[in-house]
Image (cartoon, rainbow, N blue to C red; front, side):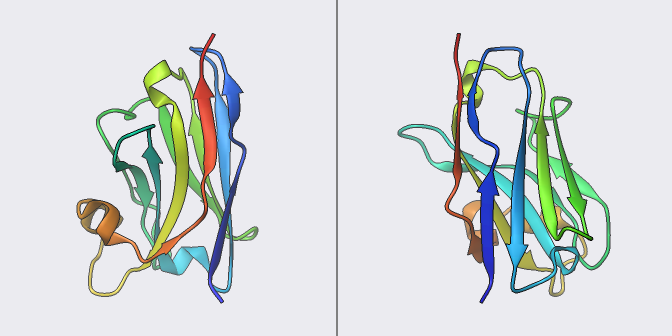
Length: 132
């Protein structure tokens, strides 16, 4: 059974940092396109970042987080991370990890471009609040 479990969320002041983790079981993350999404209160779930599967290391970011967030993968731990720096109040929301078998696509961005519908497997999310 495929499962994704996020952790690392919490309360942080503006300008601070957090690192989110997404532990996978039932599959190996390096074979899947893996992504992070955020859902702010009362808003749609939005894509933030992704990392290629099939052993690749290519990444993609939304404009809202480019330069501040970094996605990475530890194959030995079967875990994907999201390092978030210089956090802003608008980064507040529930952060979700998602996975999708690469299939015919060669980059994770092809799936991320489809938004929520590009990924089949989801964790339950971890909340992040950026506030002073």
